[in-house]
Length: 359
Image 1 (cartoon, rainbow, N blue to C red):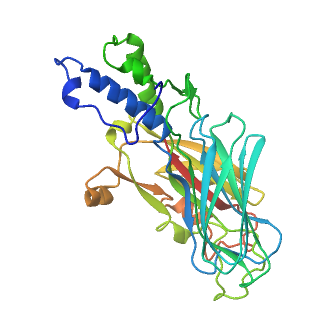
Image 2 (image 1 turned 45 degrees about the vertical axis):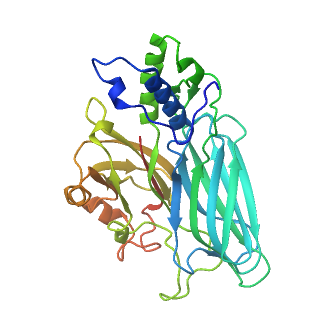
Image 3 (image 1 turned 30 degrees about the horizontal axis):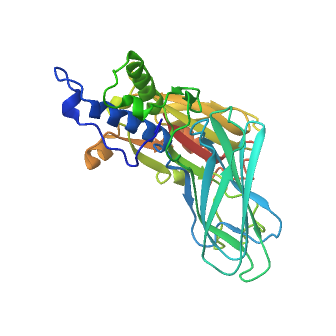
């Protein structure tokens, strides 16, 4: 079938695609099948993943309150379904809204009883995305019943993979890089290998290499029904603090082959800043300085050099990078701490959301 693929694909025999050997028909078919599979299924891992301890992410109010928010990458301009997974307790509702540019898409799920509940939700994008990112906001409410709150323990989201076959015609990812699917029947026996196949394959490989990978997704929890009453009252973090430097990071494997010809790897950072900024502030991430003076979600792009974390690389025997906040003086100065806490430092901004991708 045109543009079809198998799942998982059968990889090409490397012996048939080396210099000096005739290119076997089976290798071309397998390579075409693998490319179609990777465009449809590859990279559809979690773009959001966060959990909370008992008693932290609770809502007792009976009307929806926005409690967490994330910026997520658009997988492609043809992946339309975002699956959101929750583990929750208590009776209540969860409403997820994905905003892409001027368009918003929503799905709501209600639960009854004490639980625990495994909640599945799917947001369907009905208009072809015109941006490379969207903002996912989660609202929570309590409904009547026992216990007297609706609590979220785990939240995760991923783009739903396509099923075979791939749609006809050239397609684009969130950054308008082009992918051209292969007609499997035309890549089979008794058909000549065209120059166009090679050109399309090289372009497709570059497009697939630029598919975003979510490394860190963190949001503070806002709009609690009631503020904590004491130091022993469980409450979630609203802003990032200095204590997060050593715990909120991901050990990420980045192979040397992923670095571009000018020897760098692109990292996209999103910060959700709170408080009207009366001054610019700087943070250090992956040994790079980013400076902001605006509120709300802010995007930054940094170029990482092949200078991996030596200790973790030796531990895993891979090229491992520590993706998160650096243990740096800038971060100690501007993250929440015992001497820098709202409202005692009302003129300083605070980070209430951090999302990091690699491409």
